[in-house]
Length: 101
Image 1 (tube, rainbow, N blue to C red):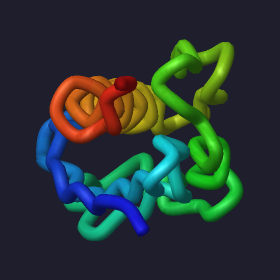
Image 2: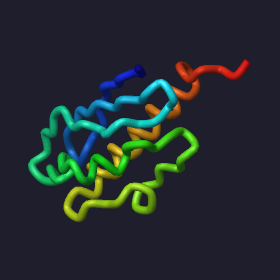
Image 3: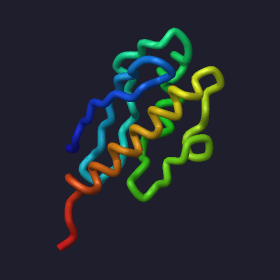
Image 4: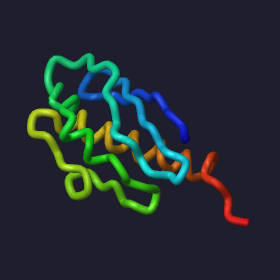
């Protein structure tokens, strides 16, 4: 199984609520946008953009614009969600990842 995290980041002016699943091996599942409150940039809800996260691990850099592509017109939203996912992966690594014997 794994863990699911619900988090919020600020887009341009308002919060974006999203969910991140991490399986038992530490691989990301596709990110889901639960609530998008901004008037612009809703393209980050696109399944193709969100699927970029699938399979990424703590060993992946998850760099915005190189590992995770930018969306024109949703730059801040996509950058902030990417940073939030990176933060959740780091928390999972520190607090929940299986420890080597």
